[in-house]
Amino acid sequence: MANSGKEKIYLATAGAVALASALAFGWLAWSNTRGPDGPVAQVTLAPDPYVPTATDAPTVKTELWSQPVAQGRGRDWVYDTFTPPEIFYNARSKHFTVKPPIGVSEDVTPEEPFGLELVTVRPEPFRLQLIGYVGGEGDWRGTFQNVATGEVFLAAAGRRVPNLALSIKALDVRSADIALAQSMTTRQRVATAVVHDERTNRDVTLTHRERRFTGGVSAFVAPPGESATREIREGETFKMGGASYRVEKITLAPPAIEITKESPTLSQPDRRTLTPREADESAPTSEPPTP
Image (cartoon, rainbow, N blue to C red; front, side):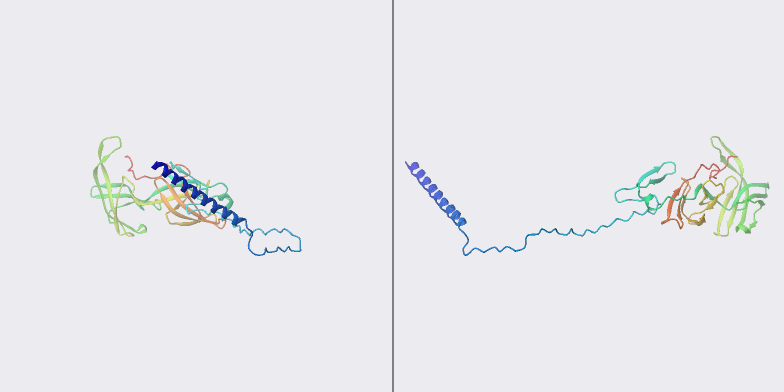
């Protein structure tokens, strides 16, 4: 009986809540259907007929991006906004080459022949070489060669060579063990000369078995198809065919030069890496000759 009384209370409470909700929502619905308070404003129409009009399009400023310029390594090293050049590695010359993006470098300036080829790169020999000897014990004379002129002359210790700014301080011939390639060691006479270099104030040792080099390198270049060469050195600037060339770098291994060309017909310098146009088998090496 107690449970039955509680259920009746719950049902009566729920009914009361439902009745209150119905009355509240009914009042809100009635309030929204009522018209606005006060007089309704009158709408006055314009006497002129409606004419549709179109607004002007906004002004858009258009700018064209300038053509990409070549990088410092040369005219073909051009990087477009979304198209870099195709870069290739030459295993023979151990240098990188590029193919510029299509329609970029060709549109900037027409291709102009570089006008120069690398013939060979050689180590720079010392300006005096000892190529042989004559005489006997206590009266040795060396056979020397002036590299610049090709002159060959005999000289003993104490001789000064004024046109080369050199003095021969000592000359001696002694037996020494010589290791031959793919053979046993033999004992041979070797001529040795100590030469004082007045330009550097240093002593230089020469032997008749091998050429003496300065440690520097020089390159020989020529116009395409020509055999007459010109010797150039790193940092040198020279003119050829109306253009000016500057030697940026020379490497012996692998043989190559980095050179920049400037001419009135070029809008910007043309920098390239040149490799020998053909193998040069006459280039000297630091290996001693086989007797």
